[in-house]
Length: 382
Image 1: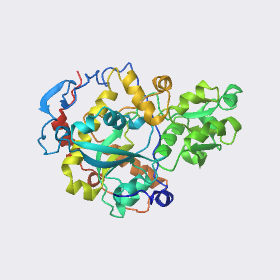
Image 2 (image 1 turned 90 degrees about the vertical axis):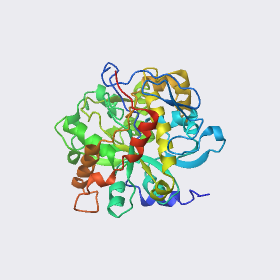
Image 3 (image 1 turned 30 degrees about the horizontal axis):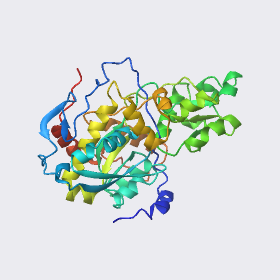
Image 4 (image 1 turned 135 degrees about the horizontal axis):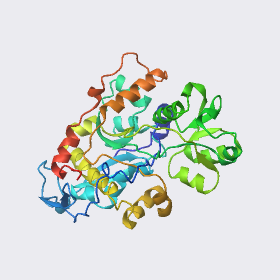
């Protein structure tokens, strides 16, 4: 049995990787992009594009040869994740037994942040890791780590789930009411990485760039107190903490533009594990896709779903309902251009250890998720 004893040391060594703890928002009126409600499948059934059980049952070996739950022989795999709302598809798949339907006993290993996700997955502490494509990921790939992206986790829609916020007291006083007021001020991100890209985009909507502010790092849970005390002037703050800070009268959101439909987080498989256990990787993605489709459904905020999310995030159901929510790709489509955009941004920020850009296409292996979609059935929006 592998151990996570090395995690503390590795976190320090790989602290450049940023996993923005985002519960992404979306416009509920945009019915053209939001998948319809899916019907809960019965245990052992494979979800069809409409959510109904398909003729292919997980009670017998699947076409990939994956052992299934009917045999009573579940294959244990270890998966690293961060217990925040953007990981909802994995949480729902775990507690709704979707992974078990495909023969997996998935052990979810929580990390307080995503700094060490890349190295823990690459060295085999995790069979599968889920996190952000930050500088540490690109630098590791440049060193030949070979940790290909096999599926997306989440993408953003408006309203932003990691908004730019300022103190309510200073907003009400007229001191900080617009993005341009942050010029020369201290503005925080949770870590160096994808959240910086979000901040830079927000600042540009007010005529600034990330070079026009004093950038500091501050963990999301520490942001409300820092804004209230004046220790920072502005901050990127993830859901549900952003909504909580608003409800407590501590902070307000500044009007700003953010990238829509942008994927910053992805799924990686340990290279050795993927080569030796292809079927288990596909099985994991089968379950995750079903969890994603539940989370994209009209009834995503059902009592059952919110109870599961509360279990992993310790966030009250009413707050989850109120906060901006996250979105995921029900067909597992990987936005290659978004990965290229992140690499270019980090290069301009001087965070990459190499000069020649990596060919983003070589960082992606969509074969696993494509096979999973074939088995689960493609989702088709009405």
